[in-house]
Length: 409
Image 1 (cartoon, one colour):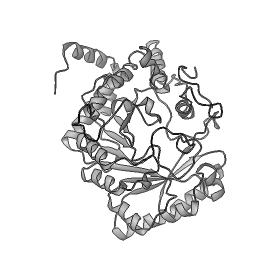
Image 2 (tube, rainbow, N blue to C red):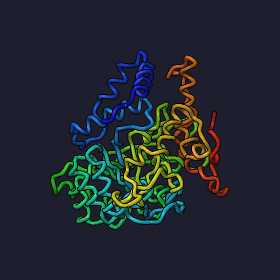
Image 3 (cartoon, rainbow, N blue to C red):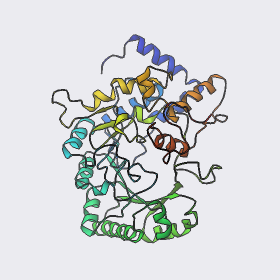
Image 4 (cartoon, one colour):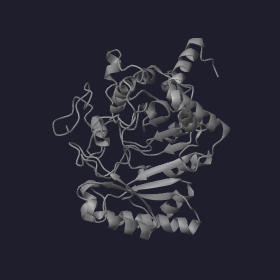
């Protein structure tokens, strides 16, 4: 590994001293095992995981570590019209297509031995990708935990169910936001609840026939005002099929439907450097490397990975990961300022960046975690990404602002 350099080492030690009395907690968090089941934790993965956690805590702008989790957009095609999804709402960010196997395999070749987790979904329906079984199987063979989130309201049969189970998929989340067609279709527009439940039973049968414990099949129930009364029915249906249940508040475009936070989200904003800039990576179907999973448009990409990185002027992932745009984004977690190009980046006004800036000021003033208010909800964070582009028409504008504002106080 190349030397960090004297000045860089001095700066890293200075930041490490800032841990203060929390140093024992930081060490525990650095060396705890990865949260994903199904990962074969080799020495190389373990070292990269620990190094990445250290660099994340130090805020290193040009990390030596590789991502530990990769999201690949296996396809950006979807069959539903979910209203708070860019694809479902009819937005066109990039050409509709599957990710090519050539591109996928080049990413596995470069990153696979470092990855703990690989997700196959972002803005499309992954089970519509014609190579999805093959892609999952190749990741599984490398000892990488794999996850798919699907609407499962698709043509499906016993053979497809068996191929998915045989691929070695670790986790399959199924988004089912209702216990009846009436409530389900209010968000999953174009979906058929009975088809989804039938397909879930096909998967359960395939697992039984093949004697497989995987994938874990999870009923992902997003709460909205119209489906709160379905919770008991959903739990009963899931139990009958043999599915786990995960329940969390869904977000909508516009004001938060549950501002009092009566219902928990799948995760609330916290004061932390963005995990995507240091440890989680997103590559879209066309090779565009996104700064995080919240971005949709290619204008926000950090670069484009070529399927053949040996070609002239082609970029490999690592070149982009350690490149100027990523470095400028990471630098925002030291000081939220920069030139006009930096200020145009989606990371500049991202709630995560602003929360961290507020946290640093709060801590400098003697504040504690117990007294810190991030100032954003998950709903508001989602609306930031939705309202990000200045060109959006008034029918799309909700809670957030266009690029250039800092969000709520």
